[in-house]
Amino acid sequence: MTTDYTVDFDRHPHAFGRPASTGRLRSSPEDFEVEEVLGFAPDDDGPHQLLWVEKRGANTEWVAKQFARLAGCRAMDVGFSGMKDRHAVTRQWFSVPAPKQSLDWTAVDVEGVRVLAVHAHRRKLRRGAHRANRFVLTLRAVVDGGDLDERCERIARAGVPNYFGPQRFGPRGDNVTRAIDGARGGIYLSAARSFLFNEVLAARLRERSWNRLLPGEAVQLDGSGSFFLAEAIDGTLLERLANFDIHPSGPLWGRGEPPSLGEAAAIERAVVERFPEAAALVERAGMRQERRPLRLTVRDIRLARPEPGVLVIAFELPAGAFATSVLRELIDTPQGDEHARAD
Image (cartoon, rainbow, N blue to C red):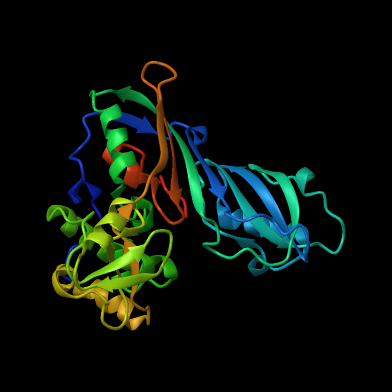
């Protein structure tokens, strides 16, 4: 392998230029809060129980195993919608088959975990079932370069590039290299796909088309995996783009031909040809072509300055998006932003 697949986010272009302000993220887990927005109400009936859980310093899969032990079921029978960062305070939903013997979930003793509410539910919670995640991030040692408020307004108005964040690529940024060198497991294949997507997005940023529709674009519906082909761009599409109803998309690479055509397809092909090992890896694994929006909608972003040198940032992102995509356009966090993610 001659191509360098080590991920260095400093090489990825910004939409609005590099921020002038700096700050330190994740001085403690309480500085990174995530709350899952399920998007539907519990059934309050059925053979499963939905647990509303707050965890601190605990891995999602580890928590699921503890709940399986307490419920007397298999770990695979415990459901959760999204992985949430260990180095944070997070609130999220789990589903567990109702135990045969009565169990007071709010009183269970699991380190770093509190069960806040319990509801009956008809089915196991599936991955990706939630609608969004709400973030509250506290940055310290902030040096305000005078651009924070203007950038916040711009992000609210224009969105940000929808990069996969550094956590997807491992603590040394080498998950793609390890995948190509023979490491097995979904996390490594996902890293290869994410790498190719990020490179396409970076190419579209350099050409100033990450938030524009190109002829031949595979246009993605907001909040959906569905897309349609736009061979020509008309006024109706431009209006829908301005309203964030649709977005340009990039490839989650896989077997077969991508659906894009024309100028959009040419950019994607040029990127993939530069990284043939990653493309071949996901094709051999049988992964199919999918799409991901190039533009990320950031809802309800707000800044607060509770004391000198401290900045609190609150916002909501759709499921699967990374908080780093927002942070890197707002403030430079050179140490410690690699875990800013929630599925």
